[in-house]
Amino acid sequence: MRVLPSSLQSKINKQFQTIYENANPKMEVTVARAKTTVMDSTYWTVEIIREKAGLGDVSLAPRRFTVRGRPNRIYEIHVDNGVVGTAIREYPDRLKDGWQNQFELGAGSKVGIAFNGHWERYRKLWRLVSDEKPHIMWVDGDNKLQTQHWDNVATKQELDTNVVYVRALRGWKNVNFVDDDQGIIAGYIKSDGTVWYRNYCSQLDGTNTWENERQLSQFTGIAVSLNLFITNDYRMGFIIEDSLGKIFWYITTRNWAGMAIAPETVSVSPIEVSATLIDIEYPQMYAPDEYIAVAPFEITTDLRYAKTDNKYISIHNEPVLIEGVEDWGKRLIVRTQHELYNIFEGDFEILDSFDNPYYPDIVTEIEDSVYQLDFVDSNNFNNVDTNGTLKFRGTATTNGVDELYLPFEMDFEPINLVPTSIPLPEVEVIYNE
Image 1 (spheres, rainbow, N blue to C red):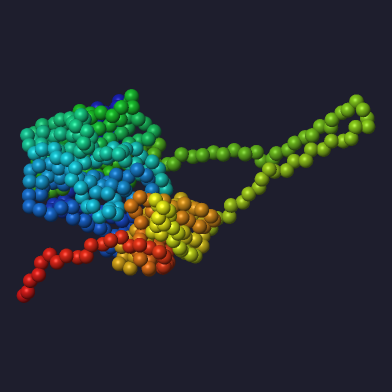
Image 2 (image 1 turned 45 degrees about the vertical axis):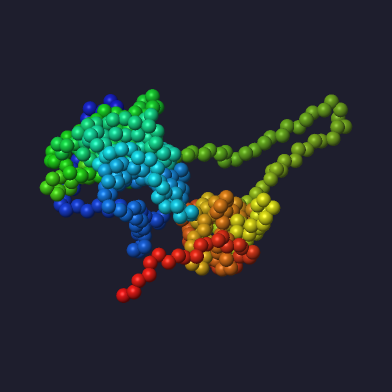
């Protein structure tokens, strides 16, 4: 794995160390909500992607355009009865469209997916801001490892032959040194049980390219499965299961030069400012003395609330004129006790009497501690009817000293809502026992 400058790549095979060995592994894929700690059994969310006979390998990756808040779409690649296919799902899935099939890639057996992107520091942590579309890898019907930039067939490339297993991951990229980039790693197993990898990395000239294949020579067994991971201390690693059921972990050295400590800022200001005014001399002795008065143009203060408690003071809906018709389910006006900073739209959630959620698209501060929640296009909260609850979730919005507010909520009674037409339930089956 390339985590050192190119001049040291000859020493690349010395970067891996075996750190753990165990038998009988079990791997599950889960999705976690945006909390900083695991507090209860409701922390994890498990979602079924599809159910049918003949399903095989599956891999997915979330797309996120900002270091704050949730992803906005999930991309997926899978094997269905020996055919490699793809799908996407909006996140959150407000329209309840579910997983939408995209395109097929032909016969195959194993798949992998990973987003490229760039790393940004937020709240003392580096987070990946992803590109618009991911890179996908699959083992085709001839056991050739193929890759492609999502649906761009012009980027299709054969990475290796005699491949039986593949996994993909975006590794660490050093933001200070161009060639210290682990890139997108395609880790794979060949038919003889050896483990190999290729990296899609930044080069010294700023371009990205797939580097030559390299064997993980430290592993000497016969591999049957593998997975990849990154650690919070700027390492990347392999987890390999061999033919005897034993698990081996291999990790790289840290790719952290200049990244572990935030840049320092030095600001300089004078301790004392003084001005000396020299008397103006006039030829005429009767000229009056001159004076210069100096005063600041403007002095302002910004008093900010530093505690983490808050609450709603008032909530009401207002009409929005759409094609000459007033729609009362498109705008909500709320007042909070204390002002909000770094506002994140996902912190505001409306629940109706059936606990169905509604999320605003835009949140704007229109007065001190007064906020306008707008619902764009087809998004609205008309189905809330006469009773609703507005929750503040407390995941990203902060107080005046950049600390997260604690969650709070308030019931409200919207007026003039027109619920959308909901079809009556239909009987699917009736039977007696």
